[in-house]
Length: 292
Image (cartoon, rainbow, N blue to C red; front, side, top):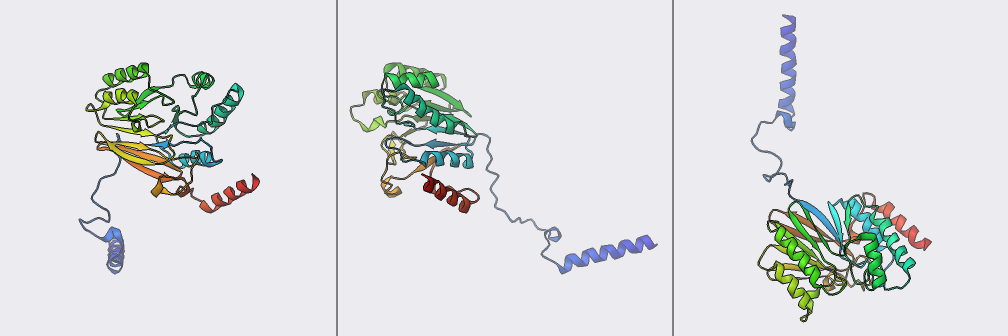
C-alpha cells in the first residue's frame, strides 16, 4: 500500500510539473516540428571541390600561401589548379626546381588531393617542360570522380593533335559520365583563329553537359557558349589591380558543388574566409608583415 501511494504521489508531481511548465518540449504532443520539411542535403553523389586561380605573373607574396591554409579550413574533396603556379621562363634548372619545391611544400600540406594544371609560366621552354615531366609525368590527363569526368588540358600553348586524340578517346570511353569539367589555362575560345580549340570543342558540343574553366587573364568573367558555362578565373596572388569583383579583379577560390542537377559555382573572396579565431589570425598576419 505504501509503495502504491508513493507511485501516485510521484506521478502527481511529474504531471503537475508538466502542466505548470508548458514550454518543456517533452510534454508537448504535436504533429508540428521546429524544422523545415526539406530532407538532409546529403546525397552520396554530391561533392565539392575548389579551384585555385593564377598565383604567378608578377606574384604578390603571401596570397597563395594564405589560399592553401584557407582551403584546409574549407575541406573540399579535392583541389584543382588553373595553372601558373611558378614564374618560370628561366634557363636555370636549379631555380626552376626550387620554385616547384616551394609550391609542393604547400600543396603537400593540404588535407586532400591537389591536381596540377600546366600554364604558360609552368611550361614555356624545353627546360620547364622537362622539369614538369620529371616531377609530374603527364602534361595532360583525365580522372573520374563519382561518375563525373574531369579533363585537364595542357594549356601552356596550342592544343596539339595528339592531345585532341587522347581526349577524343577519353570521351568515347566515358560517354555515360553525368557531367564533364574542362580545365585549360588559356581561354583559347576568346581567339577567333584558335582552330585547335575548335577541334577540341567539337568533341564535347552536343554530346554531354559540361563546364569549362580557364585562367591566364587575371580578370574574372563568365560567358554562356553552346548553352554551357565558360569561366575565366581571376587570381590567387597573380598580378592584379584588385579593383573589385565588379571589375573581375579580386583574389579568390572558386568553389564547385556538384549536384544531381549540375554544378553550383560560387566564388569565395580570400579575405572573406576566416578561421574560428579571426582576431588571432589578423594579429599573426600583422606580425608576418612587420617581419618582412
